[in-house]
Amino acid sequence: MKYEGNVFRPPSEARSLIVQCTIGCSHNKCTFCYMYRDDVFRIRKQEEILADLRECAQIYPHVQKLFLADGDALVIPYPRLHEILTVSKRLFPRLRQITMYATARDILGKTDEELANLHAAGLDMVYVGLESGSDEILKEINKNSTSAEFIEAAAKAKRAGIKCSVTIILGLGQRAKSRMHALETARVISAANPEYVAFLNLRVKPGTDLERQGEFELLDDVELLTEMKLFIQNVDSEGTVYRSNHASNPLAIAGTFNKDRDAMIAEIDEAIKNNDFIPKWWREL
Image (cartoon, rainbow, N blue to C red; front, side, top):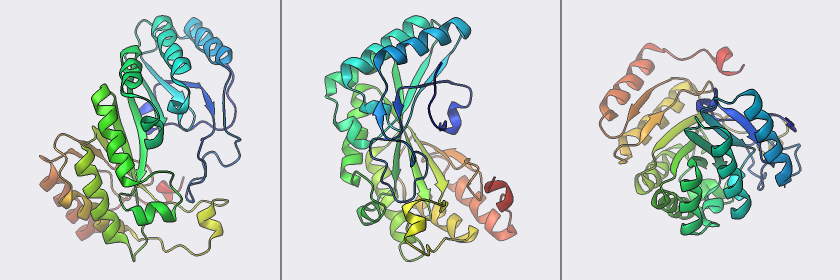
């Protein structure tokens, strides 16, 4: 099996087989992102991808979860992606979940019929980085989609039966736009009603455009949790599973909207009151 560059995957894919279908990210211009900076994007040759799947099936025939890397495998043209999914299901008879990263524009670039067929072939869920619901902030970070495009893409995926796991970044609006970031993100998530939402905490990594732009006003732990609380107070997304269990977060909480809203807010208030945060040294590992 071949793999080029660093391996990145969502926390929930820790026990998944990871097979690289694309190298890097097709956009690769978000100011905060360091993941694929050194990669030149390309889609791997189909025969290489299928060969890796066949090799893995010989070694790990009982795989139940498969994650197709890298940054946005959904950008792969429909006929090729459909074949990858079909072959995967045939090679791994116990396979119950196939997932991948995707952008809103990847989803919008496929027809309703194509997405439905991809779901029927085995695509269960896509991980989509919304980052913020504020179009002003999205423009500042050079995201390649708008909040309206995200809402449309989430609805399109849902019609096809494909679940969306959405990532939001705490602190992305700095202090001046923290409130706008929280409220606009709550608005967009309420409109999209995705199956999953997760928060990450912003880190300014060396070599990113954000680091080269100069001083960025990072929020402290209380401000980050206040931003998280404001989002939770204002989101209306019945049934959405919420997590802030990434290693970068100052507090790990979990629940389901809207029924666990009060419990999650109480947990945040208690952490702020007692100064009870995950140690920064642990979050910086």
